[in-house]
Length: 318
DNA sequence: ATCTGAACGCAGTGTTTAGG
DNA sequence: CCTAAACACTGCGTTCAGAT
Image 1 (tube, rainbow, N blue to C red):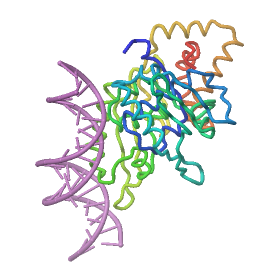
Image 2 (image 1 turned 180 degrees about the vertical axis):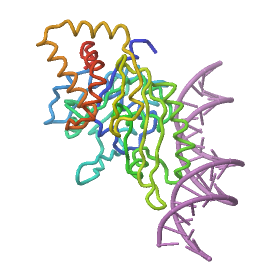
Image 3 (image 1 turned 135 degrees about the horizontal axis):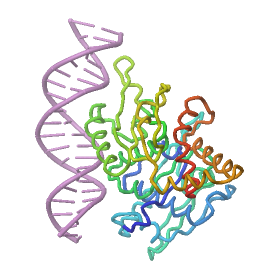
Image 4 (image 1 turned 60 degrees about the vertical axis):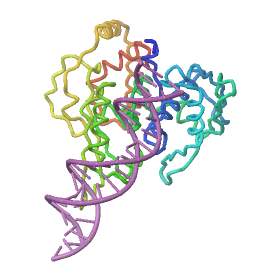
């Protein structure tokens, strides 16, 4: 795998990350690669939503990120992705849907005919908020299906360092078989996921806190830490923060020297440009967190991380 | 007192993936 | 292509704690 693919990012709505689906590990990879390639083929911020999105994707691009990309295997995965139901929640219903109008591998294996139903264009394109972003290579390097799904969830809410689920919902999102008891989830899933994410990503110390009401577990909270993230140097966190931020955000982290230079450049810019960059960074941060209203706690997180986001804007990542 | 689900351990099968 | 290893799943039995 060549180096230049390492930092390729894919973006999609958090509703996809937390949707219920039955994709296998390999299908998840193929699915995200399709999204990635389709987004790179057009201006993904300006896609018409009045008609289905039809594209012809070069299969070589899709296969670049995949391990074991034999045509027969890719073909089978594409067929399964087309078939697999996705459960999307809105206020009133959990909708059971197929996302694609068509998804076909050409007989010469050169292209993939891709037709996304118009109502789901907003899950992958024209993203203005509530979306998640992650490195596609990092995602495909995870082997277990459960690890991938946990990764998607964590990336959706990464700066919050925890996320709470209804217990049944959690099992559905991860598609855990009914035969698994909660302790099986601990022993057979979480332990492995923890190791896998620790080895392949900067996510560490994953834990699942279970909350009982009566005999039954009704709520679970997924917690995690991020290591080697570029956040801020020399912050002294003395003040006590509310529960959203636990001690784990309070670690000292450093910007790389390259990023530090970019930040210095930013500081030298004139105020008007600085303001534009600053606002862009902040908007991105708020979108990423997915919390519409600013509050004291969010503002505190922002203060700790604004430098990072400014650097991201400078790099053109945002 | 009884019942139920969680926690834990164990044994075994089927499926997917990596690597020669 | 094939094989070994890793992953995914099933089932069963025991112990424990809390609900009814």
